[in-house]
Each structure stands twice: as C-alpha cells, then as structure tokens.
Image (cartoon, rainbow, N blue to C red):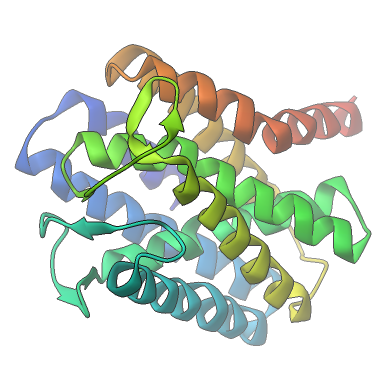
Length: 238
C-alpha cells in the first residue's frame, strides 16, 4: 500500500482537471487504508478501532462543526469536487485526518518516550502537514475561505487562524490516542510514510505545483518533526 501511495502521488502533478481530483481521493483512501492497516497489524484491532474512532470520527465532527460555525478553522466551505458529502463535509476529508495522524503519532514515539511530550510532537507533526495541504487544495479549488484575513506571507488565501485551529485539534486528537498501544511490531512503514510525505510535498510545491511559499512554510514547519526523525533513524542505522 505504501508503494501504491507513492505511485499515485507521483502521478498527481502530471495530470490535470478531473483526473487530478480523482487521484486526490485515491491518495487519501490508500493512505487511510495504509495507516489503519498498520495500526491493526502492528498493535492489534483495539488500537485500529481507537484510531478510527478518534481521528476519523473526531475529524468528521470537527470539520462539520467548523464548516457550520467558522470555528476553529475560519469561515470556509467545500466546493463539491471531492465527492459525496455529509453535513457539507466530503466523506473523504475525515479519512485524511487518520491518514496523517497515525504516522505523526508513530514518529513522535520514535523521538520521545515521555507521554506529554509525545502528544505535543505528534500534534505538531500532524498540524504542520496542513502548511502543505491547505494551499494545495485551495489552489485546486476543493475548498475556500470567504474572508481569509491575516495570512502567512505568500499564502494569502488561508487565514493564520486556520493553522492555529489545526494545531489545537491535532493536539486533542494526539492526547486521545494515548490510550493506544505504545509499541508496535514494525513501525518502519510509518516512518517512511511521514518522511516521504514531507520530502515529496516540498518538491511538488516548489517545482511542480507553482507554490513556492507553501513549499518554504511546509519545509520549515513539518521539518520540525521530519528532520529529527530522519536524523534519529540514520543514527540508529549507523
């Protein structure tokens, strides 16, 4: 599944229009199955069930509330290009929360054994991914903000409050995941997923998608977790 995910993401910048939207949904679905499957195989069905309840269920709840109230992400709405919706939220969106929440959680466990610090690192690792995600998806027309207001330099379409909302929600989800099993049989696929997402996102935004500002912001933000993870893995291998 990791190989399939990589192939789909490589194809993404090479296509356009409706085909790119289809690949967006396919990427999320494969990523979701990869993360949930890894949780199940490495830590058992209980952990997989908790992951789904917390991140898929929680992701849907916060997206539905956010779209209806404007909190915590700002006043935004989806355009209908990502398939069927429930309460205005495309069904694929909660899957994306799970897809990246799990590798962020596993990566954090590699970097620290302190529960409170792991929650902080995992939440940061998930929220920083949005520095890539939102600029890319807004650029593709999948969702938009009515009045972005204050924004990061070079990314005017997305309010800074959105990223802060992501950080708070990601920390809450990470805290809820503390009830899952700490150690797994083999976490290398999740390390690879997190590092691939980081490196490929920087490359795609900078070279293929014409989003140099989000490439820089994402490289700096997600790099706070991805770079230490890469260094830790390299040192252990050495």
